[in-house]
Image (tube, rainbow over all chains, first blue to last red; front, side, top):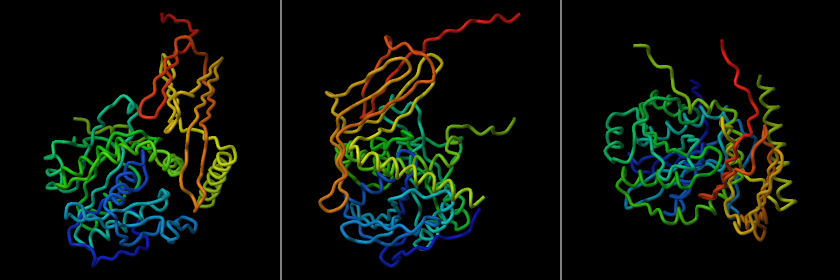
Length: 255
Length: 128
């Protein structure tokens, strides 16, 4: 494990202790990106800071003439529950993943927050699945129990995880941060708003909030078009990761 | 090793820039697609969000399939400037002969799926 921490700015004092940190960086089906950007826009996310993506050439995002870091954090209040969202306009290159994961766990540790890491898990027959399944995994028994108690998820039992999510799990163990992974069956190479909606439904049940789903589903086609460039970059990025491992099963133990 | 990775990064950036340039100048998007090779058939899935289905054209012959669909793609870019496109266009060559007469198509969640049976010319070899 690489211990480098990507430089970040985080206004810790504006965050209530224990507020969940929802990580949704661009990966399979852009599920995490859709979820975090949707919640941020629905609930008028307030900027909380940024995390520099190591190993990228100099890039800034310009939105409404504001100069921003591509990877940003927002604070939202949903039904008086505070959430911290980690979102990025560009994918994190493989060499920057450790730094990113270490920063996220350090930030969560500073506010004693659990991390809810949301994303997609590639499903080749996604087109035939009306209601994609959400799989959960946690390094904390209580968080695992709470997720399963929603009755909306299945336990992630066997398989591999790669990329930022794997790095977050490893980094969290070092900092004693609780992590819950929520991964939904998703298209691998197309943005998947339908899969993102399932994650939002799960978050509603887990956190006891009511994030509306209709606007997300109504603007699904527009979202897919809007995220086209990011999807292409993300697919290229994923092709440099052992993403095929996520379709494989570990050999396990011989009993 | 590091130098090699940087060279690959540069190649990828050039390719992405070239693709984007092409799309912007032609106002025609190359849709994302995947081709699954199954024992009996090829499954071609093409993502066409915002496509006008009335104008969707799928032409096929030999191993080649071409797909055209008008669309109204418009994403805000800079003040007063939008990245626009008026159609999707894709041409895919299949790896072996197929039977187009038996091909089926469906459109679901913005994705066009073609199932094209392979034309199999093969002999069963008996194992003694």
